[in-house]
Amino acid sequence: MLYDHDNTSTRDFYKLITASIVPRPIAWVSSRNAAGVDNLAPFSFFSVSSTDPLIVQFTAVGGKHSADNAAATKQYVINVATEPMMQQVNATSAGFDEDINEFEAVGVASAPATVVDCLRVRDSPVAIECELFQILQIGNSQVVMGKVVAVTVDPAVAAADGHPDFVKLAPMARLGRTEWGLPSKVVELERP
Image (cartoon, rainbow, N blue to C red; front, side, top):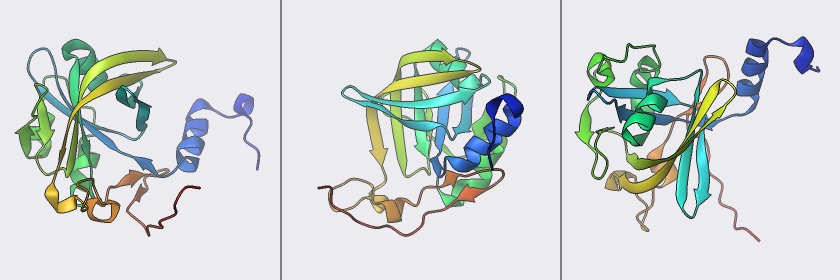
């Protein structure tokens, strides 16, 4: 089957790509707007942009409060989402008004971040605190890049070296359509 961009609607092409580029890790972004209202939203376009400086990115398609908040306050937290949080993660994808505290609206327990001035998801096993590095406007999306300034890791998911163990971390992922991915088998393979 061939899907030609010129003969496929933008929405259908988007659905095709998001069902093909899988699994996608979820950046559950917590931020605070200039008026002090806390925001929480999931993004499945999320990755590392640079290792020195350490920059992580998420992409807000169509504009989102999280990107606006990052631009205004210059800080946010990326929380790792796990299976017990699936319903809450999904609920925070709704289009809340900017004056609604999404932690409270969805019933997500929060805790203060350690370096940046906003909340993190209390029960997230890993919280990556970021200071805004750059926002790129690309088409209908904003690529939000943040310099990592602190990472909180729950000891319950840490391996002997202190880093998260994938099996213990058990992060969720987004797939295509309404599908979510849960951790599968781990294979260890040394690089040549």
